[in-house]
Structure formats: structure tokens, C-alpha cells
Amino acid sequence: MGELEKLQRISTGIKDLDEILGGFPVGRSILITGDAGSGKTIMSLQFAIKSAENGLRTVYITTEEDETDLNFQCNSFGWNIAPLIEDGRLKIMSLAATRAIITEAEIKIGIESINQDIERLLEEVPPDTRVLIIDNLGSHTGNLTPYEFRNRFDFFVYKLKERNITSLIILDSATAREFNEIALFSVYGAINLIKRENPYTGRRERVMDIVKMRSTRTPVDFIPYRIGENGIEIIEKVKYE
Image (cartoon, rainbow, N blue to C red; front, side, top):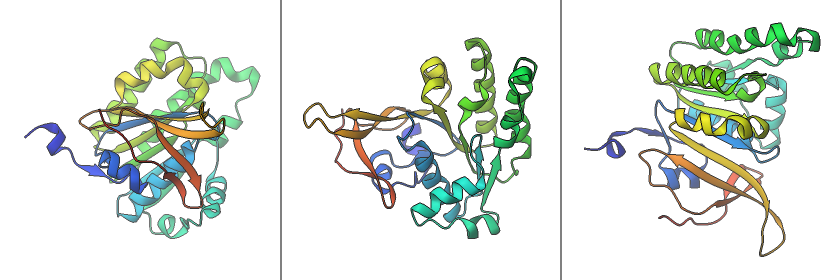
């Protein structure tokens, strides 16, 4: 029996994406990239909420927003995360305050400690955590060289796999432009969310590119999606190679 058959999956939180991928592979890290407004945080929240609702201990690490901001986004889609937080199925950990206190004058001596926060946070992640989202890692790459980024990113992914944690790692577009090719080597899968102008209609649209997903049959074409009242929704059937 091959890995494709043996690998367990958990829901992405997006029904039609589950039908396409079969879910995210358990215990593996998935890279999510995309421009501002493409829906990276919404996709992450859908995954976090679905995982917690399914009884998987879930941790959401946010580096730019706090719990109030995330609650506001959830409420706009009618998602009530309060019960999940209250009973411990969902935990939100914020690095936003840490990032805000670093002044321009301190940046050179502070950047190392900022990146070490990621490793220290892993020690604070409850031992029974099954799902982790970090939104976004780009806020803590600072002035790292490609070699430094590769070392830290590899270590982060390795530690998550060691603990059998299924994770989404979000990179903003600026960081992805600089480090995307490096990050792709370490992760099990990668999805890029794209905003573009449709060459046939001239209208703006959002499409999803499944860049890679090991042990998974993936579509060859971009997958059109929208951000509707229920979050991210796939709006067209896909074609496979």
C-alpha cells in the first residue's frame, strides 16, 4: 500500500476543496501565499474552525492581529468562535504586541530575538495540539538572509512534523517573492491565492493555484473561487492532468 493510500487527511474547512484534495495530509505543513485581500486569513480561519469543531486541539498564532481582530473577521461571516475558545478546542496566540514594541532604533539587535519568539512559542503550544496555523510567518523574517531563513524554516517545519501537527504556514506576498522557492522545498504542500484580471471578461477574479501537494492528485488548472457570505467558496469544477 503506497503513501497515497495510507496518508490520513483532515478537512480543509472548504467543502469543494476537500473534494479536490481529499483534505490536508495529517502531520504535514502546507504553505499558503497570496496578495493582500486574496483570502489567506479567511482560509486559515475556516481550517482552524473546522478542525476545532471536529475535536482537534487547534492553535492559531497571529503575528499582525489580535483576538479581537480575528473575532471581527469571524463575526462578519457568522462564525462564532467563542465556544471553541472557552472549551479549549481553539487557542489564539498573538505575537502582534511583541512586534509592535520593536522600534526602528532597536531593529538590528532585536531581529534575532523576534525570530526566536517563533521557536519559544512552539514550546508554549499545548502538547495535545493537532492543528496549528501561523498567520503570517513573514512578519518575523526581518532582514534574514536566504540561508538564515532556510535554517529557521526547516527547523520550524521539522518540529511540527515531529509532533505530528498539521499546519498552515502563511507568507505574505513580499516575503513569498523573496523566499518562496526556499520554503517550497520544506513543506509538504503549497497553495497560492491569486487576484488577477480575467483575460476574456476583463473582470477581476480570484483563483487558487495548487502549486504542489505530495501524495495527492492535483488539478492542472487554476481553481476559481470567491469570498462569499460563508467564506471561501470554489465556484468552478476542476480539471486534472
